[in-house]
Length: 143
Ligand SMILES: Cc1cc2nc3c(=O)[nH]c(=O)nc-3n(C[C@H](O)[C@H](O)[C@H](O)COP(=O)(O)O)c2cc1C
Image 1: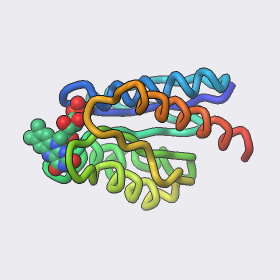
Image 2 (image 1 turned 45 degrees about the vertical axis):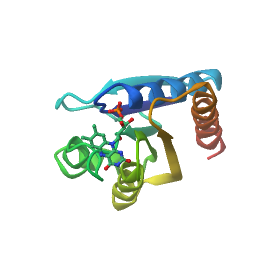
Image 3 (image 1 turned 180 degrees about the vertical axis):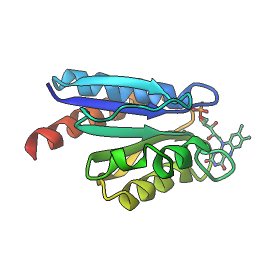
Image 4 (image 1 turned 60 degrees about the horizontal axis):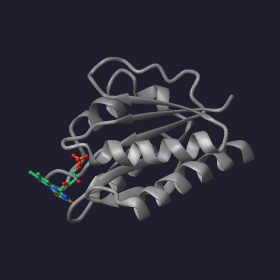
């Protein structure tokens, strides 16, 4: 079965809500989703068909773990995989763009733009997250 791994960080839970909305769409489209809040441990991506990485924007940047996962010992696991960025923001929302560029730097097949949501996702934005998850699975299956 198609498997999507979502790695994320959050300060106050909004990015986690975005992740859960995307997961609802992934599962509705018939794929498996594994949600992993990054805790510094190695995340095995070997059987993932796609990897989504999420972070809020703090002080115009994603959380520092983004550099750890893309540039550290597990960075080469991303190479060549399908990817997309997601996250919540309050002002400029640069994190999703920066993660997207990190993914391109790892020669991932990136869905651009990713899923950026203003503050705490309301029902309308959660529906957009679900649609994003569904279309991701359609893309994976279409390849
Ligand atoms: C100290 C601080 C700095 C922030 N800096 C930014 C920023 O530079 N750009 C932005 O778009 N939002 C910024 N925000 C807003 C957060 O991105 C927003 O509250 C987001 O929903 C937090 O997501 P989370 O609940 O997943 O942590 C900032 C919030 C705080 C508390």
